[in-house]
Length: 79
Image (tube, rainbow, N blue to C red; front, side, top):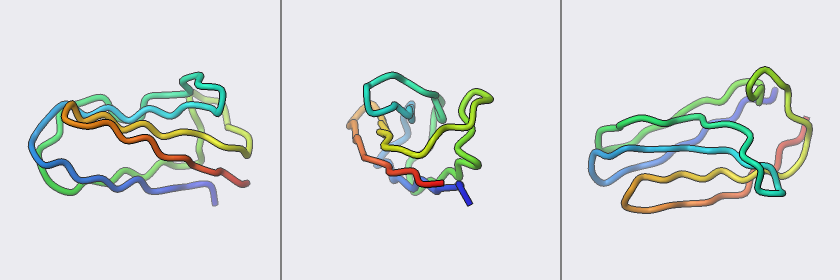
């Protein structure tokens, strides 16, 4: 199963962007790009199918930008 869940908490309502990059820094897709209220949030990314293209196994970077902070996490995707 190639689904994965991203959980995050924001301290105050703000514009949130979640981008996925390949290991070379190329942006694969934007998952979230909208205003979110403060609190706990989660998003389920299904099939790791970005822009109609199934992504291969490998290392990816998740970048979460809430305006107040930016977090980058490594994701290792194995089919």
